[in-house]
Length: 426
Image (cartoon, rainbow, N blue to C red; front, side, top):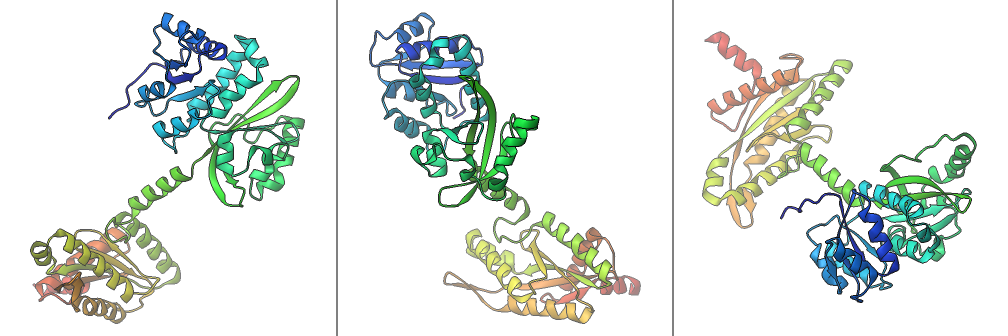
């Protein structure tokens, strides 16, 4: 189901007392925020009365307020109710892995600015500010000019594995791996002396951080500077992006590898072939391109079903990889088509020997979960630099040679030079 669109960033306020009313009033003055609901167990709470006047949904049950906003997964929840169980309810409804976005970071600091400008009394209320910080889903870390940690919210505890007590008054570099750990104090000193910032003011910068046990992980951080009570502080909003990086890596893998056999696909094979050709040119070596098409695969696929056909292709890929050298590359480029590049092959005889080994390996019966079947393979071979010096042309030539192998009775290999000879003879 698509997330409903609202004008402004969706927000839920839990606790409609003096602090909740002030927060609501501040948000109503900012068109970047859309308050979706406000809740308080006291129906006479001032925040609820203000919300009713302005057409904002009100609830006396905080959980119902959260549930009413479940269609807005990016919703920010501010808990000023003194009820520590609210954070758990938020996790149940919006998910454990929901994290604040860069927009939320911006909103948070706009909120701090507005609190100081519009509601000065909230700046003086340490508990109200801490209530908000405790319930933001990203890690919030505040340090002073010497790099000592002055603030460490529950989300930061979960990300780094340190309790607030363990982190407070410690140097921020405890959260960094080398070499950043050893350089951190120098970064702060340089900024204070020259104003040259490394990450200050850069939103969503990706860095490597370290958990309590020493485990390194990718993190996105946005750092701002603020003055409070005559002192300078640096505020970092930290987000663990391990899951995002894992997903990006998986997507990148899928872009270059066949989903079924996990062999390189055509795009990656072309990169490999280009590299092989470059090496062959530099070292004055020969390379062979083998184009393999299975014989009898369609019959197996039609008779035993596509699932069995998929198992067969996986086993074919495995046998080919076991037959060739580690320095050689095999890719799946079609339903039952495979391409190989054999580096530093030196002679036609060596290329033919590898092709015959592959054909022999494929000729052995396949046991597919109790179902036995046989396939063969027809292989066409082109040689670099004899036949061509361009990857696309070499693949085309090997493909043509493969068709000659098919026409010659299958389960055999043919060179592109034989295709040329046949044309000249005709």
